[in-house]
Image 1 (tube, protein in one colour):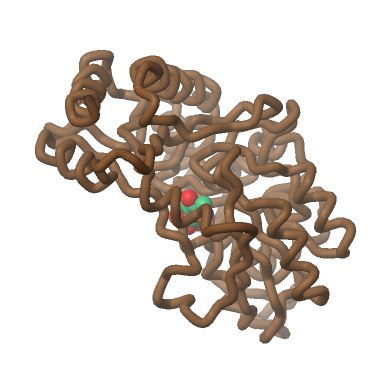
Image 2: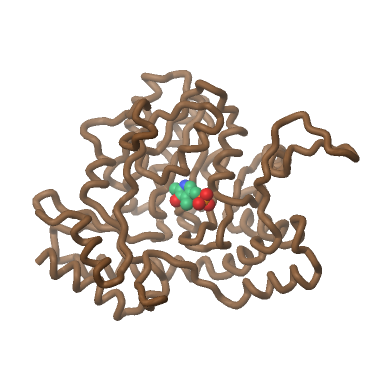
Length: 374
Ligand SMILES: *Cc1c(COP(=O)(O)O)cnc(C)c1O
């Protein structure tokens, strides 16, 4: 549906329950601090994922920061990170003085290549922390990655910010790491306008995260501090939006899948266009539908993005790999043969995947792209 005259990549989709939970918060004056919506949102999300404990926070980035702290990353420590991802996956390593080493992607899910991860441990055997992201809602090769981390005694942090409700061998993403991160930013599959969550089976660690997130206040009548704290807790109003959205998460995923299947069917006769792939043992949440253009096509992703933009349709390049970002120019990058992530960046793009888009919107997007490739 055109909203404000535009077909969107992925915009918030609200229902009626969000306001009900916010209304309750106003009526009981749980506007602040924290309050029942925060406690319930944590419990409901932990139950949905199938994990023991959760801390609701102001953003996915703050959840990643606390995960990196809990993993014990100290200044100078090496942390292996997904390379083809949003910068928020890897920035928190720098907050703690750690040093990212970027691991290339494989072609079957576009996520961290387990072979490259193994190679990285040969070069940096002392590494004790790995951060893997599930790109665009597609689960990584999680069994292989967990096994490699276990073999090296490394803590795994799973960045499931884009993959909430996706499953791998029947198990929810956001449960494979010792620490797991969700985001409820505006364009994610469900949103609280802004927010995030840290999840773990370790009760004490989640308690510690809540402590750091509320300014590290020691249990004294006055403000007593033994550690540096942060103001990272989610508000009770924001958590109310989250509780309402969670009721519609499975419905959102079904609509995202329909968008993916529609694009896939529309491009199936064009060999030069391929959808973002996933493993048969996984069920993505199809957060963003992406295509990869064959090398022999003269057409570039930016040609398509610009053509769509001319019709007020939002599409986007693939995340630019972290090892090619100026800010990380000094960091190491481990790949097998070739730079797979960069090839995907140079030949791929994200298509409009907003669940409010109509059949007519989809037809328009598809006809513009088909017209350019044919
Ligand atoms: C959105 C996103 C984040 C950050 O979440 P915020 O809530 O925006 O801080 C982290 N990692 C990935 C992969 C994301 O897509």
